[in-house]
Amino acid sequence: MARPLILFGVLLYTAGTLSMKTLDRVTLREGGSITIPCLYDNQYKQNTKYWCEGYFWNSCKITASTNAIGKWTITDYPADSIFTVKLHNLKSSDSGYYWCAVEIGNNEEPDDKKNLYVTVKKAPDVSVVSSSVSGHEGGDISVQCFYSSGYQNEVKQWCRYKDQSCYTVGRTNTSQNSSVQISDDGRRSFTVLMTGLRLTDSGWYYCSAGDLQAPVQLNVSDVVTTEGFVRNSFPKPAVSTDTSTEKNMPHREEHFCLSQN
Image (cartoon, rainbow, N blue to C red):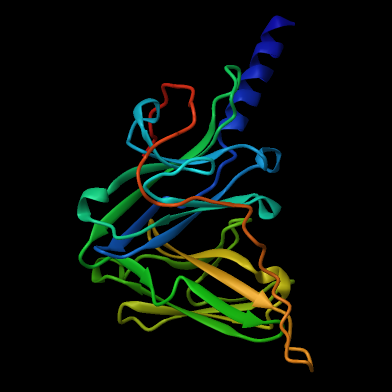
């Protein structure tokens, strides 16, 4: 009986460390900015969220947290179990591995985390015209995504962050939410058209070409009332931090885990 119990414990431990979701690889323009969404498990709504810089998890440097001032800005949306990290004024030296993480605070279970790689260069390989788009219920929106010549023959997709559902260039997909069509002009850009929007379409998406991604936030609001008011459906943030010096960072358990990238 001992062996099955041990195996069960290992499975629980592994599942706990894999619940965080974020992008895999992004490229940004020097001097630009980006907002990285980090999706966490519902059980961690009240836990501290933080952003860690470095290839090795055990030695990464915390540069933003929901309860301390840091280099970047974190905003938490507990209602949607997601927090965002705003990176700005980026330099090529900012390129490297980063981690979205939730502090668990005990020795039996490590902090929940997921890493991604950020590349800062003069001309990003995958980008979008705007990282935030708005529409109204029943209406349409379009998003233009750009890619470099090196990604011309790669698969192009539009994916929803929450459930990782993806739509591919050349196919028209109609779901319970809206119709999604992606067209590639073959000249370093493709366009995503979403029609028949619903309030439930609000959230985070990303354009992808090959292994690179560019996040986009979609906000769908109610139709304007006769009084001229719009009832906005996007959630309000619970916590936000400033961006200055790194201090008062939370204690973090040191766990020796290597990136798999």
